[in-house]
Amino acid sequence: MNSELNSELNPPAEFISDALISDEVPEADAIVSFADFGLSPDILRSLAEQGYVHPTPIQAAAIPVLLQGRDVMGAAQTGTGKTAGFALPIIQLLLAHASNSASPARHPVRALILTPTRELADQVADNVKTYCKHTPLRSVVVFGGVDMAPQTAALRAGVEIVIATPGRLLDHVQQKTINLSQVQMLVMDEADRMLDMGFLPDLQRIINLLPKNRQSLMFSATFSQEIKKLAATFLRNPLTIEVARSNATAENVTQILYQVQEEEKRDAVSFIIRERHLKQVIVFSNTKIGASRLAVHLVKTGVKASAIHGDKSQSERMAALESFKRGEIEVLVATDVAARGLDIAELPCVINYDLPYNAEDYVHRIGRTGRAGAKGDAISLFSEKDERLLVDIEKLIKQKIVRLHLAGFVAEKFVAAPREARASRGDSSRGDSSRGDSSRGDSSRSESAGKPAARAVPRSFAPKVDPWFFQPYQPTASKLPEVEKPAATSSTKTVKRAALLGGLPKA
Ligand code: AMP
Image 1 (cartoon, helix red, strand yellow):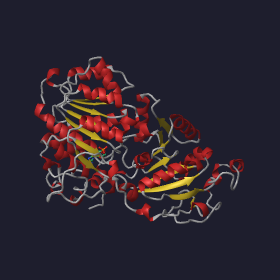
Image 2: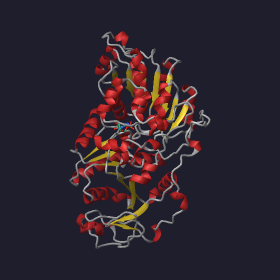
Image 3: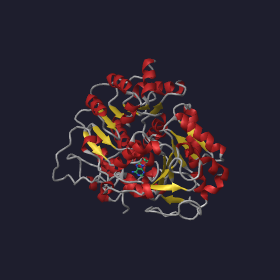
Image 4: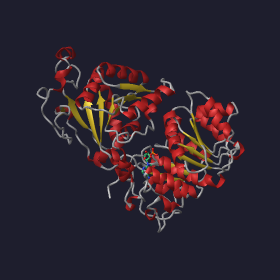
């Protein structure tokens, strides 16, 4: 965690209660430092080295509950500090069994963390390793697409915490290279995504392999019927802990929509990247083939781009991610699955080349920017065929996104200059702010010199705004699992929902 982020991540005490929900934990705003949780000095040392000073809202809410051994159902996504929220109590509870012995028998698998993607598994594993670096506990990450041998060697040597994707974990089970009979803690991270990816049968098989007597946690951004059903099969009397997400989108992320024709989207992306001088941007595509083609197109136009998606080998994906983090690649073109959980802090901009089919993914995508309180731009392209998707997104975020015209690109089909005519003018004319519609409309965005000559769209696209869109995001009750919620007591603070990490007001 870089130190600039820490000041943003250290919420003032009055916000620490925002995520929670419990009558059994100490008053959350009494917890202002990690030491207040009673964590071991070995853990506190790693946290101090990371520069963590105060727990984030999800951590303040989850850590005490998990330390009590309760099952938890968490509504929180990447970027909220959720990983430490579950990893720290796991480490603390496992310290009771920690051994300095070299014998594998003294290091059985005691905690299993399941994630949908390799990237997320890798990130969670990095965090876990960091947090337990001063303890004798061992951890290993296990995912597909890479050689099994090093994973097998690590498992055979003995390891207490395994972070795994379901398929590869079952490969190890089949090859008898892992023994799950002593697992006492199970975490299902991004459970909704695991179901979307068809992991349900694998998850059920894995759950059946675990001892009945264990502590279980499930994190999910959404709570569909399937998620609730799955939760009912493996959580016992769970507490619900929720951190709302969309507030950050409202406060930190400037959302912009450009209507262009479908066949012009690729040119529009390279135009936006050039005109805004973007040096670190994730572009989202709905399909693997779309991501690949867009990356090739961008490279042809001189942009350092690379695609990451499920058809790329694990090593290719990790290499692309590392190059991106080092700044050698400016643009990562990603599908939702590949981008899920990528921990790239302070990304200044994300671009939606396609609007996502699932409105929830829009929130996930734009959550890649404006993280940890930083400002970000989320630019979406949409064509006529995306209208329906846009309606769903705006309903979900309860916000009307500002529609702007991208200079030189035609919004409606068969209006203004035909495509061939524009093509003959060449790309360079596209940034010419003297052309096109000069009305700025109601754009709240002030474009500085050197930024693209974006214009607000008058006429048919002038937003007819329903006041409902301006209400703050409130997760609906139906999105929450039907699990026990503790009754309010005198020690329970009023629950504020505006608790996404990035959305916290500064002290
Ligand atoms: P996560 O939501 O778990 O992916 O965490 C998002 C980022 O926040 C990661 O880079 C973490 O290292 C960082 N982080 C988590 N908890 C804290 C904290 N209490 N203080 C500062 N940074 C944190």
